[in-house]
Image: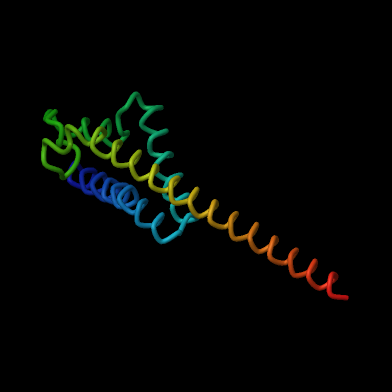
Length: 133
């Protein structure tokens, strides 16, 4: 049973890490809806951890099947990574979110400028048309 829990925990962890690492790429390709979806998924995991006192519920489940309490007893990761997992990927998540927000603001600002220039250009054409009549 411990092997199944460790495998499930590792698969979930890998999905969350892939989600975190995908955020800046999605932002650069202006896939903000996907970035938002992945952000919500990661934040849901953060909520689960917060509700459970900073521990994954799978850790508690795995602890029933072994006396081992190394940082990686419940997941297939190197011990050093399991030990520093939250700090490493927490920082990467924040950095990825900063890239998403920066790209989104740049896109919004660029669209705003395009729209105002387009509206100004249309107004000038209308004025020129009426002045010539």
